Amino acid sequence: EIGRLAIAFNVMAAQVNASQRLLRDFVANVSHELRTPLTSVQGFAQAIMDGTARTSEDVTLAATIIVEESDRMHRLVDDLLYLSKLESGQLPIERSTVDLGDLIALSIERLSRHAEESGVQVRSDVAPLPPVSVDGSRMEQVLANLLGNALKHTPEGGKVEVRARLESRKIGPADQSLGPMAVIEVHNTGSFIEQDDRERIFERFYQVDKSRKREGGGAGLGLAICYEIVAAHGGSIRVQSDAEHGTTFRVNIPLGETPESAGRKRRQ
Image (cartoon, rainbow, N blue to C red; front, side):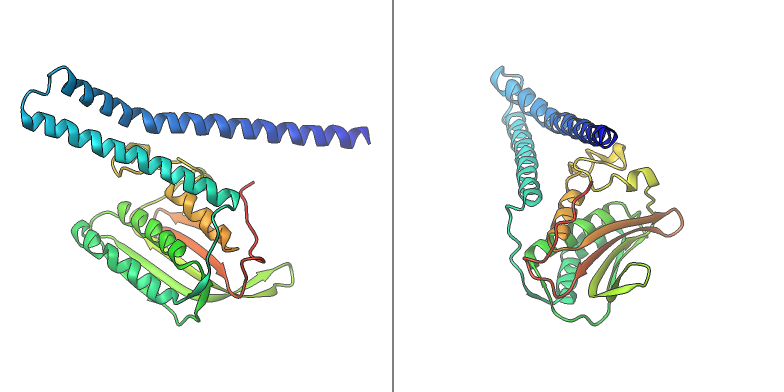
């Protein structure tokens, strides 16, 4: 009994240490993300106040940058609040009958202009799917984040492909069937994610390519939001990547689950 008690204490101590590390990382990441826009706002506001920005063009430029950086901080705070509500279950999933094929086509259409300007080919391969019970707006957000991320990391001349199909869920050594699930895959060529990065890619603020952190204007919250939305539907999201074929994000959405029966799959 003393041995089991000691093991339990060790497990709890490890969990506390992990929680403290996550909290420290979170505070450091938020501080880092806010420091640059705050510095810009302070610098250009000071330029207006002390007369360094002399001409009307200088003042307009300074004011424009202040507004842009303020918007950036506002989006960061909104994303953090949104993610917090998802993680705590405070943001309800409003399910309705949705045609995934139509949702995928709409998501691709919205990115078609950006893809054309980037010289990237976007195509879809969607098998016949029955209507699914999901929160359409939330799943649209997942697709937008995954497609936008794929497009950003695909070099000119590369390809982004969205695939969707039905598969059977299997579990256990006897491959017991748990019913069908909808599978959505977003694949892009020309990018490779190392194994260490793949293990952390759904963490808040995590950036695979640190050199591109400011380039795209993102804070590293998009994939964390995708993870929580899919988990709220009782599904899962995974990433596969190799240097030859590129990167694929796979979303599994079980069919036939109700909001009450959809389990929350949390990261350990």
